[in-house]
Length: 78
Image (tube, rainbow, N blue to C red; front, top):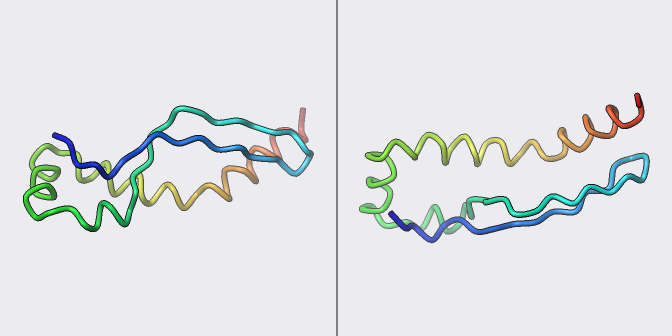
């Protein structure tokens, strides 16, 4: 099943202490593209069991700031 609402991504994160993390080769859901899916494609995701995973991904993508902060704290404790 191909929905064309995900793509490969990369991110460069600079922690508070100046350490730079390069995150590569991960997939992200493009929320505007997801919202434009046809009814048929949306139902296919639901029937396949993937819809819950998509919503979890979208919710977790709002946690980047918290993850960077936690990584900064962990780096300071070393």
